[in-house]
Image (cartoon, rainbow, N blue to C red; front, top):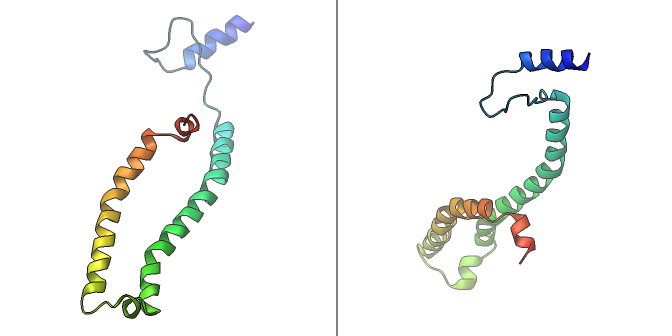
Length: 114
């Protein structure tokens, strides 16, 4: 009877050129996939939220520093504050994407070996 189930199961599968003759693949289990995605979300989303919060605080911190007397303490006059922001934000924006690409190439498992 097991041979009949296997044969009927093989007939219902879509034809896949990567499958070898007689090889059977299990259909995707939606419940298992949902549990795995939920588990990943529960581990990754809180960390990403904290990192996003720190990045946001880092970006607005320069504005808060200006309100608390940054220009007076550093002796900035006229457009010097705006120039400092320009010098800070242009490399910040330009290097954001390449640094993320580099992080994808150098995975955390690679860093363990260092």
